[in-house]
Image (cartoon, rainbow, N blue to C red; front, top):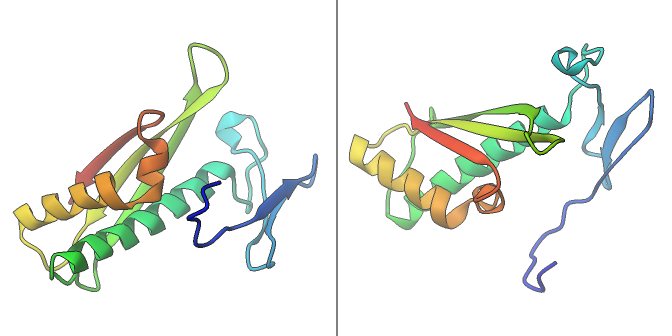
Length: 142
């Protein structure tokens, strides 16, 4: 890791039949299962794709707020980001994911929305930096 790291999150996943993920501080403590679409039992448990979607949505929403603030703009309370994370087989073997972000920026004009989303995606959001060149990310402003 870089020496400029300001915060490090730590989580551990373990288990075979009772798969589980827990953060080092215990705030995140979740049972995991494979989705039924991938041959799992499903049920009232989460999975890595849902966790990735939640993390990306939260991070990108925060990045849009920071981008707006840096330009002297304020986003309204109905601002939200919905992330859809799909998983499927790769031709080279294994699996890959694809991401769709649906971005709703409350209180801005259309041209302002495009600029804020571009800045958030290209310059601010760590998830966007991490996925760039590795994961197909489609962004739609609604």
